[in-house]
Image 1 (cartoon, rainbow, N blue to C red):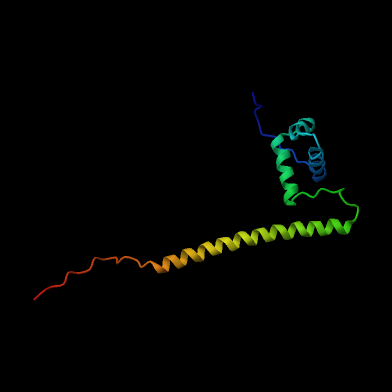
Image 2 (image 1 turned 45 degrees about the vertical axis):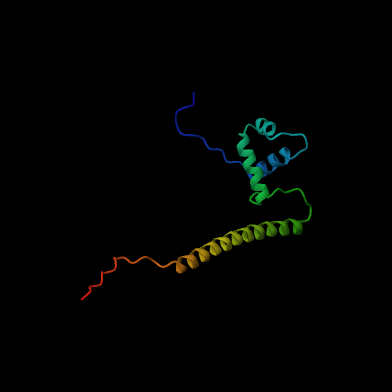
Length: 119
C-alpha cells in the first residue's frame, strides 16, 4: 500500500544521468538491469536515453578535446532548431493550401434568392 503524505521527488544530477545512460549503452546490458541496479524506474532511464539522443543531456567523457565538445553541443542545438523550422514550414504549407482551397469554393448565400414576379 502506498505511503500517505506528499510524494518525494528525486533530482538527479546530469553526471548521474549521463553515467546511467553510458552503462545502459554497454553491449549485452539491458535497460531494466541498469535501472534496477541504480534503484530507478526503467522508464526514467529510457527517457534519459532519449534526452541524450536529442542533445538535452550531454554525455561527457567521449572526447578529451573541449573544442569538439563545444562543436557537438552547437551541432545538437542547430539540429533541434532545424527540426523545429521544418515542422513550422510544413504547418505553413498546410495552412496555405487550406487557405487557397477555401478561396476557390464560394460560400453559399446567407439568404435564399427572392422569387421573381412575373407581370
